Length: 135
View 1 (cartoon, rainbow, N blue to C red):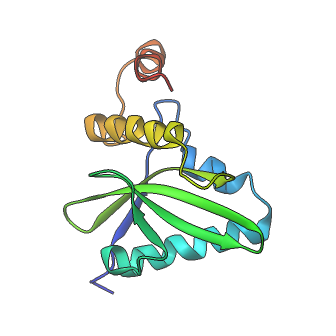
View 2: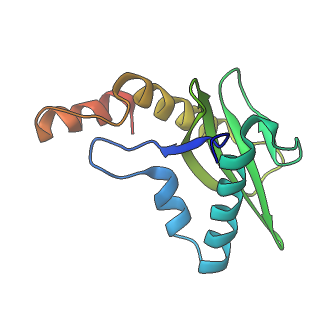
């Protein structure tokens, strides 16, 4: 469908993707539910209902997923050209989204905006990028 958004995950210079690592660390049912919601986000994007998507800052949003008594959040941002970039995810245990999670997502956004998942240079230079951002 031509109206769909493209989903991309922030990748670190070491090749890891924090959001995918989070989803893959969960049990199969929880991971499948999160992936289904990410697919919904791909289809509906910024038209997705407010009970599923919440704006956290000027440029960061959270996808809200509930599975029985567990609540998960996947943080992301929009980019021109129908692109959604997923930064990170976590299991929610408090009323408010923890500021640390928002800060981490913003650091990952900053990384993506600068490199767009295309890292060059030596392993040492890539490690310096992670250290500079505190990741």
